[in-house]
Image (cartoon, rainbow, N blue to C red):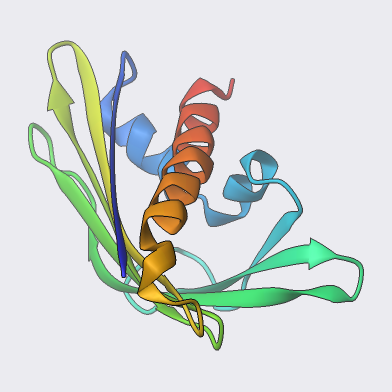
Length: 145
């Protein structure tokens, strides 16, 4: 499995960063050829399920995920969320942590990613691609107006 770790700082308050990063549908605006559908009723929390559909027309794949840890930030505290990937092609997990950093916030995104059938030889390429894609998404979500 490819291990990914991304950190970003933001001048935004912790609550706002948490809100932006956990609006799952908004991630699609920053990941090419991807649409995200939340399949459980709001609000987001433990047990929320959503599907990232990546592809062009009928050619693509689904990446279903479930929120298995949901700890929104408390005043002065750190928020943590863990997603488990339940797809037939993409497997692994992602953890999002948001905490105070100076006058703003710090985001730490960790992910373990495996593409079924892809030999471990490609873990480095998978990790680099994941860092680029998820880093772009985080940066975009933090920059949204």
